[in-house]
Picture: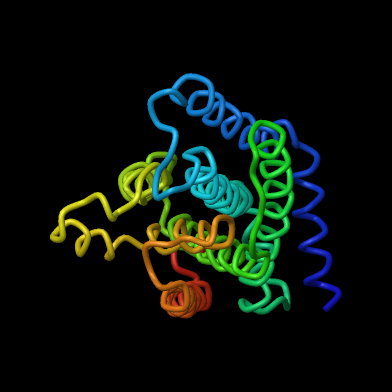
Length: 251
């Protein structure tokens, strides 16, 4: 386990060393969102689903920060190692592909824990925000972070240049996030669009963590947990196979 510990320690030191780029931006982003919705739109939107609007949207904003933190950690680490040809040293070492995957996932988890704590403290200072169930909050943050760390690794395995690395974030994930019901409930949609919305995986993440904060959700949280677990297992084995084959990594 010394090799795995060394890799995780190295990655943790890396993102903490550049904390102005890795830790502070999510906090500033959430603070701006809260400022806009709390100060400027409060007189227009005060309640949704019988909950203060600021308390309704905060869990979704927190999930957005966790998703981006998981993505940024995996992408920046793997990208520079790959395109600087440092990744070859990792693959010729006796470290197994499973440990490489665990390294990326655990590093992303450590980063989102820091981001989660800072963003939550920021939200509590700006509004009356509290957590009603820590178990569900942690479970959905953990599963979502793990899933997106693996998805971004899948993206970067196939990235051959700087243009390729923005395809999934810009054209897939960003639309799904903003259509993931961070700012409103699917109960206000017609029946047809409610059914369509349930094919968006971000919906289950946002509603799951919202359940942990305000004890309200548009979906069954147990179903959401199993869906995320199944996605994680699927993407895990895909990434593991790609790393073993050395797809776009080994020369």
